[in-house]
Amino acid sequence: MSPRVLLVNDDGPPGPQSPYIYGLYRHLTTNLGWEVKVVVPSSQKSWIGKAFHIKEITKGRYYYPKEPDGMGKVSSASRPLNEGEVAEWVLLDGTPATCTNIALHNLYPGKIDLVISGPNLGRNSSAAFAMSSGTVGAAMSSALSQIRSIAISYGTVLHPTPNELFEPADILSGRIIQYLWNNWGKDADGMRNGEIDMYNVNVPMIMELLDPKGIDVHWTHMWRNSYGQLFKAVSTPDATSTTKDVPNKGPDVAGQFLAQESESGGDISKDEPATLVFKFSPDFQPLITPSVGSLPVGSDGWAIAKGHASITPLRACFAHVDHDPAAIGTESLRILKL
Image 1 (cartoon, rainbow, N blue to C red):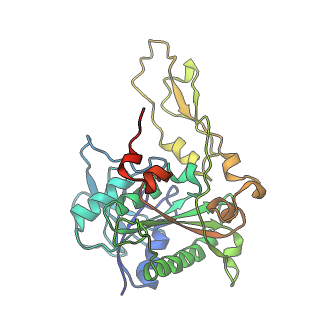
Image 2 (cartoon, rainbow, N blue to C red):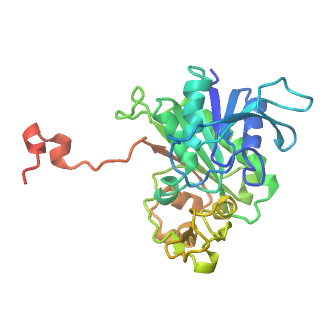
Image 3 (cartoon, rainbow, N blue to C red):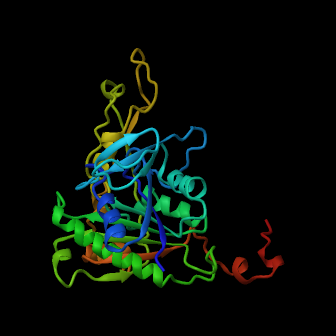
């Protein structure tokens, strides 16, 4: 039985910053024949994790994608489709996790079996990227509502990514999604009927996708890596600038879009010297192009470095460390005596 799908992302509606969502939507609906609802942020929301808007009022509009690229018109009210329009989507002025929760509980309650988050523009392999990812955060939001979810990211390897890779990536992702839906894994500690909470999938956008044999798909664990300094101080002349020149060396290409979307970081008077002003300016190159020999074999980072797609089962939690007194001890042994 085909699932009823909610498609979300963190890149927003189709456009230069969100080149993949429309192609996967068309593949799921046209080629697989699945019922798919789409609720996405109204603008790019990378690197926001699983954050929710809790003080802001979340407003929405309707979006009507058209062939061939999904570009379409926005309306404040629902209306019938015009000629050439493919579907009615929803844009919300909120985070990816907000989109997931509102869709599941307000827009389509009881009508969604599977949430697919993505495809993200850029990889979300490894702990450093996945824990910051709005794509993974949207899937995590679904898992915490006890709905199956899959986060999918297309890792940028070639600059620019050739358009001919889009369709084979969608086809491979569709096959992976179908397999996972029909063979969902077990986890005794899972929140939903002893099932795995969610999956994180990464597909490298490489020319081997065009090979009839395709690329290998590996079951992986998450590469536990880390990052250091992410921000740098802004000099006084730049402190009141409304544009932050974030280098485009982020996780794949995400950094360049953060630069385009960033706004001035506070109401700083132009009449006062600014000393505590910083901008996002990471150097992620060591995390994107590490030596293969330094990567744990079987990790998602290792897989993408080898040109493989990866599937990483995840729990919707910050994993705890089992140590003997907490895991198997009696109550008296679990009590810490200072």
